[in-house]
Amino acid sequence: MAKKPSIILFGAGGHGKVIADAVEKEGKFSIAGFLDSKATGTTFDLPILGGESAIPSLKEKGITAAVVSIGAGDARKTVQKMLKDAGMTIVTVCHPSAQIARGATIGEGTVLMPGAVVGPDTVIGEGCIINTAATVDHDCVIGAFTHIAPGANIAGGVIIGALSHIGIGAAIKQGVRIGSNVTVGAGSVVLEDLPDGVTAYGVPAKRKE
Image 1 (tube, helix red, strand yellow):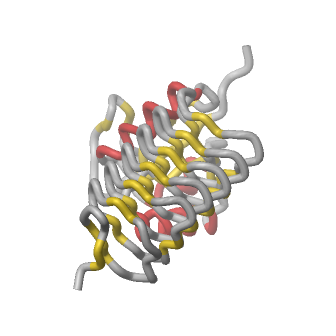
Image 2 (cartoon, rainbow, N blue to C red):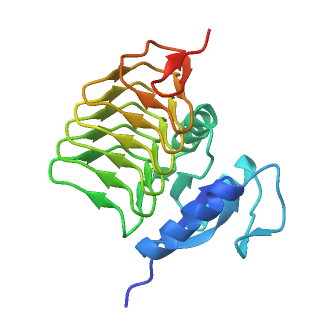
């Protein structure tokens, strides 16, 4: 049996554990460890190998695959660019229980967690998180580095801009347009379009003034 290629995960916090589990269950890579400049020791019984400065030595060992395992969208964007500029290959991770429908496209560095569902002809941008049991129905467009939190349900034809956060258990009505850098609160129900940069919550969701 051929040896699996190695991968490093950048970010050794709680989100890193979830991604490590998904990588292990997907079975395409062997995890060499984590990179995290703010942590030492181990996470999830995997070694923390240092920070950004460790990348050249990893590449010398033939470890060139990476995924960002940080929850915050702006940090994911910064780190993913750094890894690419350093010559690393950014990997998409899909837990084996996640479902990707015919015609859907998934951007590099996106992670699909257990039970996530992506519907037909939906486009998921780079560096997104489609978290545990979240659903994104047909013909949606999800912008880069956006996080669809656990249990959130996005109906068909929804467009969400980059770097937005759709909170745990939120529901988005079909055809709604949500801008970039938007936060939708946990359990909220979004029935109308939301512009860039706002926070909205409640049932139905209202913009925070």
